[in-house]
Image 1 (cartoon, rainbow, N blue to C red):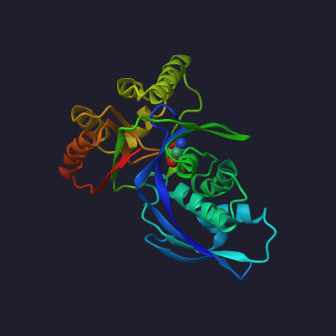
Image 2 (cartoon, rainbow, N blue to C red):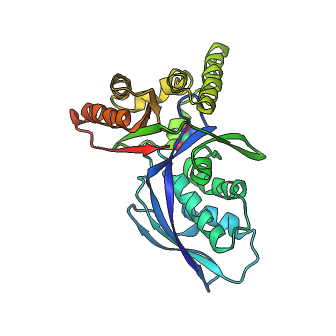
Length: 297
Ligand code: HSE
């Protein structure tokens, strides 16, 4: 009658795939307990780690749980305990992990009546509460694992994208907060055709590289001429981190989601660890504190 789950952090956008591409991290995430309860409805009974609202309709995990609960005809309810490790506003899918965890856990307790796409659909409601817009590029990798491509939001269509066996991510999270809604507000509504061409060439190449295990092409495709020029200004020392990561052997680097976290991809754990040391040095010289993680994808 109860399930403990690990709800992973995720990296959205992956440079050229704004709002559609994402991947899942195995080393960072929230823990949650979902429990059937005699009391109808959805009740958040415990939150540890960060100060988040207990009121179901104001809590991301609560809102996605309610979206699923509304589709059920049951005489019991669910309790949710959230042990949050992913700091809100860190750019590694904190709200997505909460939104996904509740619906994933409830679905397991119910005997899996819903498929993964349906779970993502419920979780979108929770994500929208946090970021003020419906996007699924963090939710899909948290539910499906690995790399995912959100082909369409309405109707929701998600593709699993394979990735090479030896691909690792190094993620640095400088401890400043960037609200996704604010990082979206600074983006232009229109982009010049020449930039769009560069972006979709890179995006197509990245997807091809992931299918063909072409590490070099992964690196060459990790460019973002649409979003990064605007958002990188919000992240202190972004250019230095990117330069040092690539010097230390990363295939490429970019902003994780809406920032401030910065991700880099490397071939092999040794390179990913070298990148970790190199980018640590950038922030160690400043006042900014940071977390850093290495994850196999
Ligand atoms: N694709 C979203 C954005 C992800 O970049 O605004 C937010 O985590």
